[in-house]
Image (cartoon, rainbow, N blue to C red):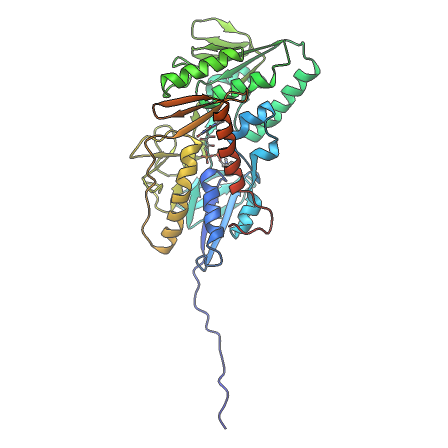
Amino acid sequence: MKRAPVWRTVHYPVMTRHLVLAGAGHAQLHVLQALARQRPATPSGLRVTLVSPSRWQHYSGMLPGWMTGAYTLADCRIDVAPLAQAAGAHFLEDRVTALDAARRTLHLSDGQTLRYDLLSLDVGSEIDTGWAEPLGPRLLPIKPLDAFATVWQALLADAARQPDTRLRLAVAGGGAAGVEAALAAAAALRNSPGVRLWLIAGRQGVLPGHPAAVQRHARQALARAGVQVCAQHAQGTPDGLRLGDGSLLPVDHVIAATGARAPAWLAGSGLALDAAGFVQVGPTHQSVSHPDVFAAGDVCARVDTALPRSGVHAVRAGPVVAHNLLASLAGKALLPYRPRPWSLYLLATGDGRAIASWGPFSAEGGWVWRLKDHIDRGFMARFACTPGDSIA
Ligand SMILES: Cc1cc2nc3c(=O)[nH]c(=O)nc-3n(C[C@H](O)[C@H](O)[C@H](O)COP(=O)(O)OP(=O)(O)OC[C@H]3O[C@@H](n4cnc5c(N)ncnc54)[C@H](O)[C@@H]3O)c2cc1C
């Protein structure tokens, strides 16, 4: 009698590779989306972990609108937990405190270590507040955005309780973030007659690097809003701001929107960093020293071109980094991120208008605000995802 075949399961060794996404920044949202889209065809044996300190990723482009009451906080934040779930990623609500690129290991604030085979870094940048530390509790860094949102709400509540109280508020930083924050603060506090507002723009003045017409629109908007512009360097003291001309500006609070600083923990990582401590990457956003590390957004510094640290480039590099991570796992060719010669910047002026800056062109008006609102809401809608959703 013929015997029935005996089926045996043969176990081939499956190489499990671990892709770690550190930070849920703008570019990483695209990575999560790309991973979700290709499921269930995700490379077998691939494990994905997302590490970020909060499930909420606040969108800086809408923060000034939130300060003026145009948006609720819920309008301006993306829930990354369902995005991670849709991508098949395990979400660790924690922060990276150290990176050892030689050992391919991340250390987290709760003491755990995480080994990776491939790492995607999009942890953003910090506000450079070294100049302002003597201000102590008067100092309000605009980042992290969630921490700023909490202190700003408390400040507004105080002002609303005592509308006639004298409040001296300075915003430090002449770039887009500083200008938008000063205009938003002026709009939010317009019913408090005791408020005085300054924008400390630094020696280069308002919006350096933007065309003269954009700078003019910004100065006009600041004048309309009653914000006094001070084009001087400032140093924090326990009593207020010491300005470049030696005078002391006594202030109650200083919102710092002054330049980007690299996360300090990168210094001991062994990754190639630029002089300011940012991760050096080539056109494919792969680390120039460690091919198993990709970085995008504010945390990276391109070695081939000077990319401004802006949300625009973090967003645009996202799909390229997403492709490159998957291509790198599959041993396929990587793509470069080629920035366009001009990027569109839309700056809210807090009064239902906005300023557009695009290469040498500029515009200002209510229609620019409506365009900005449309683009920003569209960006948020792209990443709105509730638990159990798949991503279209
Ligand atoms: C008020 C304001 C207005 C702005 N307006 C504009 C604008 O109109 N246009 C524009 O182009 N740019 C604008 N910017 C700049 C823009 O916000 C940044 O360039 C952009 O957010 C950078 O994106 P990113 O992905 O690098 O990092 P982020 O968006 O900052 O995201 C970083 C992520 O990493 C996480 N993270 C941080 N530390 C760790 C850690 N140790 N471990 C794990 N995760 C970590 C954070 O929680 C966050 O999820 C503005 C900035 C501000 C402050």
